[in-house]
Length: 259
DNA sequence: ATGACAATCAGAGATTGA
Image (cartoon, rainbow, N blue to C red; front, top):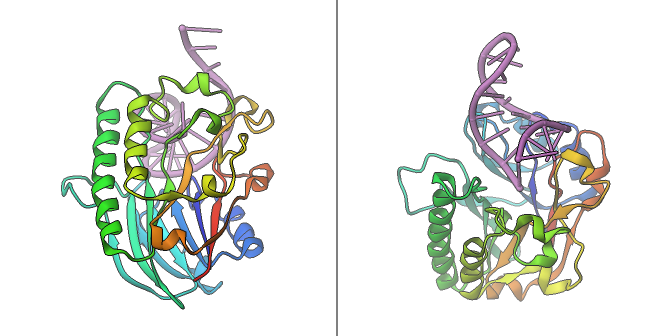
């Protein structure tokens, strides 16, 4: 089973580029972030005509996450637990049912800039809630994953110019420590489980020719529970589609699971 | 030091992103 995550930076703006990638990459499941659409306006037919089930958790203008799946989706829930007053659409989860059942969580972790300030406080609070949900997932002892735009540069080798990010919300020590705490609960980060080399990124800014200069960062991640990590056979970044017409500033990351 | 670029909503330019 091939499962991908892709921050598309607006479903309307990606009406060409997203189906083109789907048709060539043929993922079974896709976790989308930044759909920037309310549920009623999400163009479900683009995906349903390709055989995907569609579950969305959108809001007007910003944020918004969704799951596409060629297999049935069960027990869909929306919103990260832990704060009923949080109205930002950044979390959706469902169980994908095929040979094995896998709990998949799609997330769009807050950016957090500028630092310091309320947006960074929100990011760290959101990460504390994520840690709680992560522990609950581990306690199930079932195959599960949490994937999406983490807005975290885990290590210096995950940025072309790490020195430019030292004070940024994506790479500050508090951010990296909060992310590492979640990993330390017992998760496997799929890309680094298979590729040690630097120079692999999932985001390039639109500005200043960042893509042409390969001035990127790796911020889109798959975290797997031990039962899910046992199924991992591959993890790749489809960086080539960043070079196409009207691309997102992120590219897809995917895993292949023996499930 | 700043802006660069893109998307959204709106119908100009502010806001958000990373």
